Image (tube, rainbow, N blue to C red; front, side):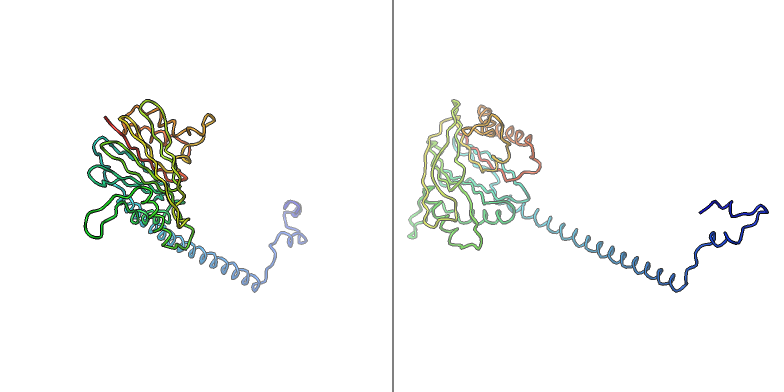
Length: 316
């Protein structure tokens, strides 16, 4: 459009042929009304969608808050199933490290007095983590049988670790679970007088022994996962602890929690070296510093798997 000044004559009046160009276009009232109605409908539709999204947001927040409360309750309930205090019997001390990856854990452990002379300990690790794995560990805790009661009331006998795991495997298979749910487990006994240890495992990581003089031993014994083979048998291995020795029972979450190092070997992963160089410390201090090393690992704030460790300490 040419400048307005060009449309004005020397007398200061607007030329007629330019007035039409300066005036706004004429819009039919009926068309304008339809356009306004269309915009109003669009605004009302957007307002309805926004209101629906707000209601969905409130409902979702309510659902998430309720789920959070239920999971926190489940976590407290699972903690109640763990031993409140660890038995310190004779020359044997127990220390634990328990780190769920989420609210609840697929790991479970326990230590119990079997009689005046022997203490039993077990650890289970359901495949996966979260609520389904936690439910399976609750069943394992209930199904674990360490004694056989004489039906004639003549006392009881302690089951060998391999027999305990065999019966546990049978009970799990008898449940005929709808999904392929299985777990690893380890069960052992220790004589608090002689410090003799007997251990059986079902697909669980092999326990290790940190000898007081500096050697590291792995207790190897065969045994497949729980819940797969109906007629599986489980062997038992034995070792003799001496004052100053420590036995470590753990879940494979430790391998996930500690990132691999260039100098790491198959014989001694990084987390084992962290334990080994602290072997001279008292058991509680050893686990406290080991927990600090775990917290310093990359990704420790968002763990990928549950971490459980039980340290059995033989003192003088």
